[in-house]
Every structure is written in structure tokens, then in C-alpha cells.
Length: 417
Length: 87
Image 1 (cartoon, each protein chain N blue to C red):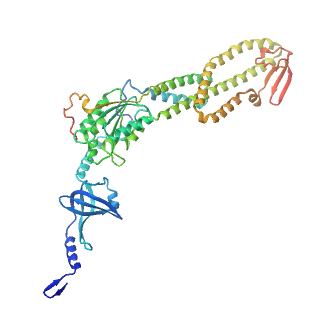
Image 2 (cartoon, each protein chain N blue to C red; image 1 turned 90 degrees about the vertical axis):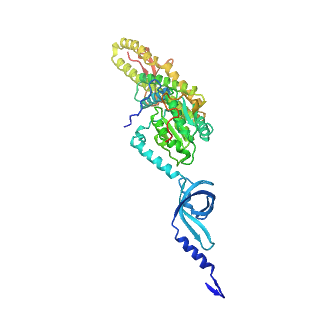
Image 3 (cartoon, rainbow over the protein chains, first blue to last red; image 1 turned 30 degrees about the vertical axis):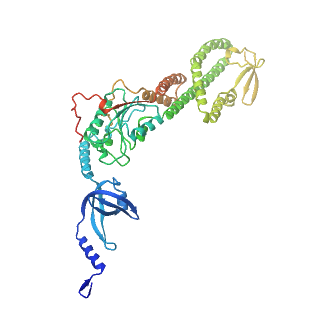
């Protein structure tokens, strides 16, 4: 400040400083206004608060980015902060510390109160939740007929499985929404052809999602005898409808994955089961055949060792053995043929793995081949003259010349008298 | 505690699910490897039946959609004409 003649002259800093001190006395306040001209620079997010008048405002960018519901252009908000005067530019700006969508605080309080009540009744308990069926005959879908949620759900659903859907087109926000959603859920639940109900809606503000926080909708979901899958809002929007439902997913696409199995995966599973059954049946048959062969050989040897009476005994044993062999093998062949046909079909339908499987099949066949059996210590008895295989003791005459095939070669032998 | 709050409705048990569970059981028993030939044959035949049920269900599946609006639904008898209050 200086005096020039009769005039008192202030420096600009004197003036801005004086104004700044006045602003210091204004306590922080809540204001309700519209957000406009949003932009982020450096560590700050700048915007204009607009009512009848305008005021520049700023908020720490990290705090702004982490708001549970970020306001966009034109959103009505309640903002809390201090109105500051920036001396360097003589600008007035509100430094916002907290911001909520207008009316949201009230809605949140309502939701919390209802959550407490539903929780106290046990309606949110994990023990109430039932898994949806693996493959529903018909799916009841409750959503808007025009919404993206419907399109997303159907696209994901039909990419997995050609499912049958009954869509109840309901308003998903606004005053008419809760009653319509309740009626749709009750109708679907009463229908015997509906195995699972999907409630879907895209993301939105808390106000938009309030129909799915309504007591009527929550109770309809809780009362439904049919399992309910809830896909309301996006990842961070959890509605009470989600919490009451049997299955909660974050998107309509995830809902499709929750209600049907992938058809291709199911078919792969069935083929695998078919293949295992055929393989195991073949194995059971191989084991039985080996045991039978072992017993036949032992019996023949024992009978031959008895000498003189052997011929009679061998004849008798042969007569008894033949039907026994026929019985053991008799039932199996046509089933075995079915098993082998199944194996073949499986092998054909899996072109990609065909090579590997073929090698394995060959290995299995190799195990069954006479050469492999001999290699494991068994012998094949042949007539020395005709080289025909002698399978039963009764087929051998006393004094007959034999050729016994062993692991390392042939051993000439003669049947004892 | 895991008892379902609502018993399953009679007469609408999902056939596919039961057949698949039965098929899994057959495969499990066969894979244990200690079944005799007779039992293996019986299990194989049983498995083939379950497999046929599953395949039939998959083959019958058809992409369909029917659409109704909430206003077209019959109202609950006894329900208030305007439906329950929203909150």
C-alpha cells in the first residue's frame, strides 16, 4: 500500500490476499449441482458444477476414479468440499473431497436396511443356494426385450448349446419394473417345463438398479422353487437380487455359462466314457480268457499224469470243458463286437488323435497275440504232422508226435500212453 | 445344513443328469479293474443304455425362443391388482 497524492494505492497481492482470507472463513459445505465439462489433467480431475450459476471445481483424480459410481457429463451430484480462492489467478474453485450421485445416499441406506432384514431371516445364507440343473429342458429368462443383456445372454447361450428359452419381456427400471419382474418370476416358477430362471440386466446407476434391490423382487426370488441365476449390473454392482439368488454372476454372458454345459464338451465326455467302457470290457475278456487257458492247461497236465485212465478221463474232461468254454465265450462275443464297434467309431471320430490311439490299439492287440503269450512263458501245442494247434487234451492220441512251441523255439514231444 | 430349502418337484427329475451320473458310475466301476467278465458285460450294456439316453437328449436339443411380455402373463389369483409395492 502506498499513498500517491490524495490516493491510496494497494498492491494486487494486498487485494487477493484480503479476499483469500475471507474465503478461509467459509466452512466446507455440501452442494447439489450438475457435473459438466469433466476433464483430468495430472493429479486432478476438473469440472464445472452447474446449477443456475456455475462454479469451477476440482477433485483429486485418484479419489475421483475410485468413486463407486463415477458421475458423467450432466450427472446430478452432491459434492462436499471447501470453496477456495486461488490468489495467483483470482479464481474461485470448489475443492471437492466427497461426491455422491444425488439421492444415492438415501437409496444406499434403504438397500442396507433391507439387506439386514433379509439376512436376519436367513434368506442370504449360502446353505439355501441350490445348483442349477446341468442341462435345463427350458430356460426362463426375465429381462428387457430390447436390452443388450438379452442379446448377450442369447448369443453366449446358443454358442454353447441349442437351448430352449422362454423370455418374459419386462421393464428393468422405473416404477413398473419391480411388479413386472415379480410377476415374471412367479409365472416361470409355476411352469413345470422351466428348469432354471435367469434374471438379467445390464449395468447402471444405483437408481437404475433399484428394482433389483426391491423387497418384492428379492422375496419372489427367495420363494421360487426353481433355481434362480441373477446377472444384474456389472462386476461391482451387487444388488440384493444377486445376493438372494441361487447363483450370482456378473454378466449375462456368465449367466449363459452357468445354465448350460458346452454341447461340444458334453459330446467329448460321452465319447470318452464310451471309449473307456469298450476298453475295460476288452480287458475283462482278456483276463478271463487268460485264466481259462491257464486252468485248461493245468487240468490237461494233471489228467495226463494219471497214466492209464487218462484217456477216459481226458475224453470226459473234454466233454465237460467244451460246454464250459462255450458258456464263457458264448455270451461275450456279440457284446464284444459291440464294444469293438464302439472303439472303432470312437477312433474314427477323433481324427486328430487317431495316430496315437492306433499305436495304443496295436499295443493292446500285440498283448493278445500268440507270440506275446508264448513270450510270457506259455506254450502252444501242435500236431507234428499237420502243424495244427491242439487246443484240448482230448484231441491228442497216445503216441502222437507233437511240436511244442516255446519262447526260444520248437520242442518235439510224444504223447505218453 | 445342505438340505435344500425346497424339495425337488416330483416327476420332473432331469433325465439327462441322472443318465450322465449313472454313466459316470459305470465308467468308475469298470475302471476300478477288478470286475469279472460277466459283470463287465452287464456294466457295459448298462453304460450303453445311459449313453443312448444322453445322446438322445443332446440330439433332441433345439434352439428356440418364445417371448411374452409381463402384461400378457396371467395375474396371480388374490394378488393385488397393482402388484406389490416396489420397496
